Length: 83
Image 1 (cartoon, rainbow, N blue to C red):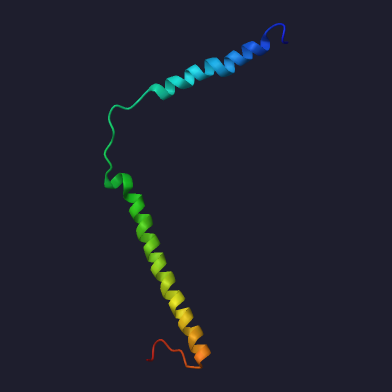
Image 2 (image 1 turned 60 degrees about the vertical axis):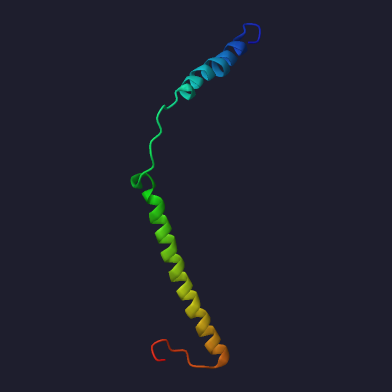
C-alpha cells in the first residue's frame, strides 16, 4: 500500500484538496451588514419578560413560605386573608 502511494493519494484527497474546497466557502464575505431590528432581537425580550415574571412569582412564593414558617416559630396564627 505504501509502495503504490495509495496513502499519499488519500492524504492529498482528504487534507489538501478538501481544504481548498472549504477555504472557498470561508472566503466569500458579506459586503453589507444587516441592521438589528425588533424582529431580529424580539425573542430576547420575550425571554427577559418571562424571566422577570417567573422571578417575581418565585419571590412572592418564597416570601409567603418564610412568613408561614416564622409564624409557626413565633406561635402566631398565619392567615393572609384576615389581617
